[in-house]
Image (cartoon, rainbow, N blue to C red; front, side, top):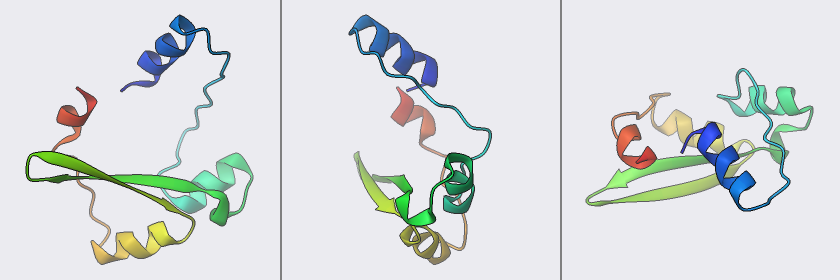
Length: 85
């Protein structure tokens, strides 16, 4: 779901929530710096396609770095369109 779609949804449902956007929050360190918090306060989500479904894992802080190293820093984008739709 795009940021714009989320904004429309919030307005349609009378939710007064501001959406904050940042240039680069691709790593825990960058997200912590952008938000001026410690890395332990950052949560990230990872989405995996498994058979006919998806599994989302939410991690916080340095666990993200540890898990990414298990995948040799690779990024999975093949199923992005399926998830967004």
